[in-house]
Length: 355
Image (cartoon, rainbow, N blue to C red; front, side, top):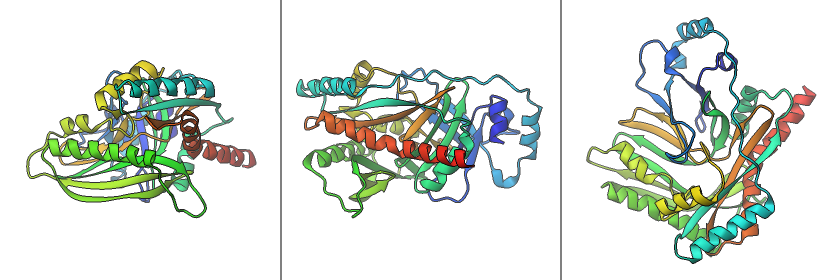
């Protein structure tokens, strides 16, 4: 069905939730019979992005989809719209930007800001996004894996380790995920002051937002090291509960972007990123997932992601700049993070050649 959706130029997201057996699918509501109260929400990093906020309807694949398939087949084939990709950032340019960020911190404007970059590579010959999605699902079963397309947003894929929030009635689970180092064979990690401080910034932001919205903390578990592909992170899991009706969108607006993808102070850091990072992140560091906008949601931060163009693929990665940051070390962190997708692309390309 996915290849047909692409041929018809229909918006969709194919996605696989952590540790679940089968993937799910959300599509443009125009091809869905009836109505749905479950939506798939794809939001860019900030509201000022040129990338549109997207709302798709979730399919119930278990109930059969003959009617949807027939409606889809009746649509004419349409030209495919490839989006332009941002430019790669060189090593030297990244170091210069890191110094700019450090100057912003030294001047007192910021405590932390994320500096990200793009690495563009040639798209493998006969690249099949559906088979690559399946490869990512098999390699990273603990991640939220997605393949999304929209004529105005482009084609995106990723395997993110970071839950933004899980809403179940009046309870919300979320996590602080920050600080990075390469995975080692011993699976044991030592974290320095810089990494601990960076992680605590995210946790303090989360706790203050939920306190502001009158949520009570029910669980705080961590920090502990978790491995995500070629890197390890510090993670603290939170669960909050509220006895009152909550404005879900207002809470989400205050929570995101967290310091893990933006910085501190939150607004000033996002403004600084917009001015100095040098490109529109679009859906990178935005969020995506299922929700009914009332009592149920499962949203993830769009990390370890890539945008697919006509002839190239843009891989996104970033790291947190704080007062103790070493620009060269921050560059190396982005290199390690980009390997989540780069290594899979290399394996996929070899397998395609063999096949």
